[in-house]
Image: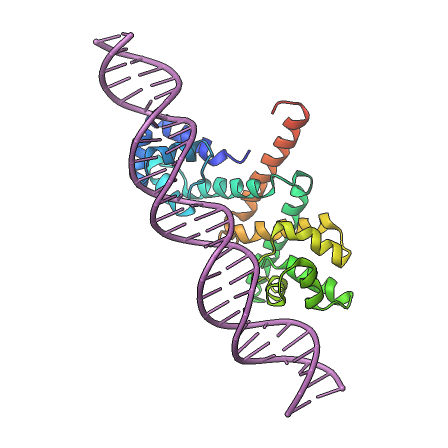
Length: 106
Length: 106
DNA sequence: ATAGATTTGTCATACATTGACAAGTCAATC
DNA sequence: GATTGACTTGTCAATGTATGACAAATCTAT
């Protein structure tokens, strides 16, 4: 659960026939670290996403979206019964925030 | 943004004519800390939610939902353009996880 | 002006995260 | 079955972030 990001970069890496060593080198981390990120044992830092997108020739925003989704999933994973409602509330908060920014009320 | 929890416990506290000192005492924190939690400057620890629910005679799960929503909102606040999509993805992950638990596939 | 309630600012420390490394497994090749 | 290369596992010090405690400021009402 919440391992979409790691699984995705692993698939992308393999599809491009890149070794962990190559991707890790581009990110300036070692291969054990990348291995852990790919398997969801550690989470990538948000700042590392552009580097992933670059070497994997993937869309930076798509990767960031996946990364955010993983963080959210991890956050709510122990409260499944409340998770969906909490996300609804958060969606409303964000929508309101976007709306009020447009109308200069913030 | 993402201050629903604090605002809510403040309202509940005032509606019940409780002082910060009383609520803080029940939580074993000092009043400056509670003040910060109410204003969203610091976030309450998840483990403190039952104590809040108890002294404020509020529904524990409702408070937890609000608390979770705040965490999610904070998480995505710098990426508003991706936030809604990320929440969608996370919802799907959670729904899938619930479904697969029911069918014993996990 | 005083007292009580709340807020602001600062700081040491506890806590979690990160990166680095050594050592391990696993698969293919010789 | 030994060697090589790719990946994984486990541990640990270092770093970063969050927490709680405190002093002091502000606000509010009398």
